[in-house]
Image (cartoon, rainbow, N blue to C red; front, side, top):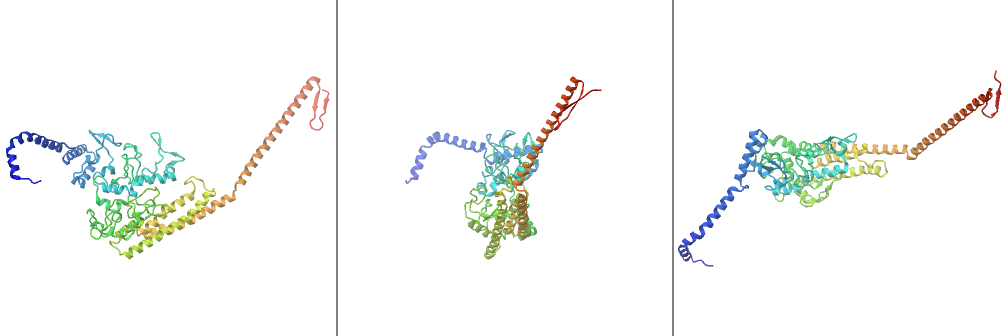
Length: 516
């Protein structure tokens, strides 16, 4: 519509008084309303800052958690005005809520809370294998009963508050890294809290603990990028990634030059910010087009190296049977990791390295499967009990894949030759020989003591007791008979006044003698 400006202003001038009378009050009311909303809204930075000052002032005055206050004050969260109440505020109905100085808060900050600002990172983490740490623990040990066996003392458990602790050995062991299941529980329950396990199942239903890698309350990206952070859990005889890394050329360069690297840059770039990769740069950092930064540490893995038998990571290769990562094929995952490697290595170098590592995995699979068949046959022949870990051979076959097998496979992909060879295939060979020897001994013992022989022994023992009982009865009858004969003689003597001789045996006649 065409507007005639001179005519518009003429009308405006003629109706100025009417506009002031009828338009000014609503405008003033609207302006005051907007100001009131802005100044009283609890979501504004100014209000959050006031609440945070109140939290910090109180804690400083009481001398409580001063170290945490110092961490927060030096963090990016403090720079960005992310406050105590922003992370710890809880609704009164939240399962982990507690009333603290007139505020409902939760000591436990879950990924669901972090997602208010870091949605993409939480979404990526939630589809990774890290998020399922607690579920892997429950699956593996529900089937194999290890925490229960380890926690027993002569078949009994430690008691606390009248209840048995069936996971006493793993609360500060496996679960410290895998995470506890806090469903329906609170931070008041010592069996599940404190815990920062990477796959902790939180009271609000979310999975994980961001502070596993970004420790509270500094939440440092530099800390998360250092390999020692991953080495808190990825270490030891069953998954020695940190030991393998430090043995590799990558670890050697990190040890020599890491102090001079740029650890805090948002987009971490190989050859610019660091010279050799760490765990984070391979599994999480960006690596050019098609390989963006991610918190899904499973998105570049083409093999599952921690299971009994390694399988390609085609979405549901894991033992939980869940869809993992982003649903891409193992070839796509492998291509992403190869792109990471190609930042420093040629295509031929990378492709040949992967071929060598694939051979190691395939060789392990065959070695383990052939050996596992020996134990399987013992079960099928009834020579092993169905109970787990009650016979030495069961420990041996478990450690073959859970310890030695993992070391060989991980060493191959992380450039740790000693872990492939002497901590890997040498120990696998030794395990094979031990298992064959144990199986032969089990079968030899079973042949030397067949079941019919044991039944015959039982029959002989029963026959012995029967004959003993018959003999006792005969002796008892003879004693009674002799007693009756003596009684008869005494009776006859008392009547006749003569001495009576009673002969036993074939001659049963009675001979009388006159008294003196």
